[in-house]
Length: 212
Image 1 (cartoon, rainbow, N blue to C red):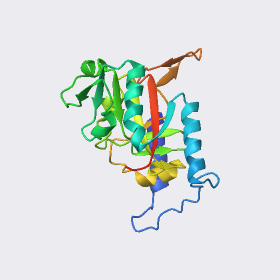
Image 2 (tube, rainbow, N blue to C red; image 1 turned 180 degrees about the vertical axis):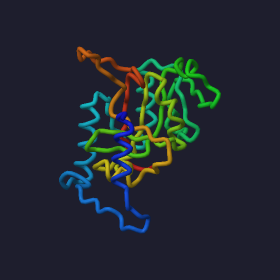
Image 3 (cartoon, helix red, strand yellow; image 1 turned 180 degrees about the horizontal axis):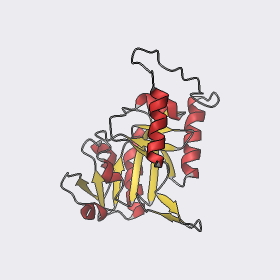
Image 4 (cartoon, one colour; image 1 turned 90 degrees about the vertical axis):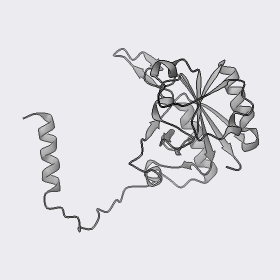
């Protein structure tokens, strides 16, 4: 018997006798660890993002265009990939050439683009995780996996939650969810860290407050 067959057998035995009309299973686990204020939750998010080697920036809504433009310039980006629903004001002060996301774009074409700017669906403080769900200001999953530099804008405090259970309540499981904890990285058998293997080498998160 294969491992797959053993696992499926256990699932079948666990579900044996379960009916649709049965009451839902009570979930008694903690929804968050400790009581934090909004300010403390945002601080924890910034701390954990930095711990995962993401570069964290803070600004107001009025400063966002300057910050995004400055980050693209610092990275030397000549082109920037733009999701279809991204707020054009975010790139108002960017010198990089905006490149619209096209369904027919090949991975090789996307790889030649220097940066991508997106919003997010939710950010999780306890894990330092950014979640994308393919919304209009995020675009398709591959546009955040191929370019080497990703600038992700998080609206504070509206898009920040404390824990994974709280994030799951906001997310639609039928959407293409991408969970990002820092820049893409992996380690070989000798624990040599290599970044940019299956996603951007540089992740910059902009925590923007004030307005929408």
